Length: 101
Image 1 (spheres, rainbow, N blue to C red):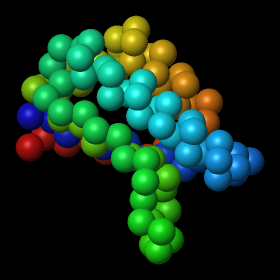
Image 2 (image 1 turned 180 degrees about the horizontal axis):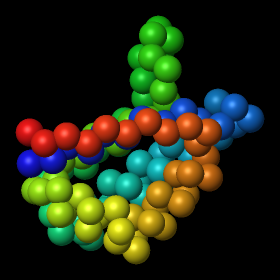
Image 3 (image 1 turned 120 degrees about the vertical axis):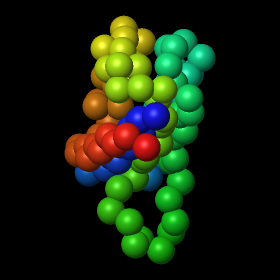
Image 4 (image 1 turned 90 degrees about the horizontal axis):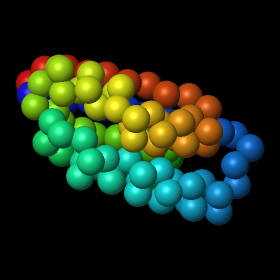
C-alpha cells in the first residue's frame, strides 16, 4: 500500500467565508475521485482544523492506494487533473509526502 498525504495553505487574499465555501467544494471534488479512479483504497479531505492555531496548513488530503502504479494512474487521470486544477486555484502552497506501508 502507498500513502499519499497532501497539505495546502489557502491563498492569503481569501476571506474566512470564501475559505469555508471553497474548502467544501475542494473536498467534494477530491473525495468523488474514490468512486471514479480504480486503485484508491481510501481518500479523505480534512477542511476543519483545530482552532488553536497550532497547525500551519488549512486543508489535508489523506489517501491510500493499492500500489505506486495506482498512485501514478490517479495523478495522471483526467478527473484528478480537473480536481487538482481547482485546488491549485484556491491555495498558495502545497506540501506532499508519499510512502509505502
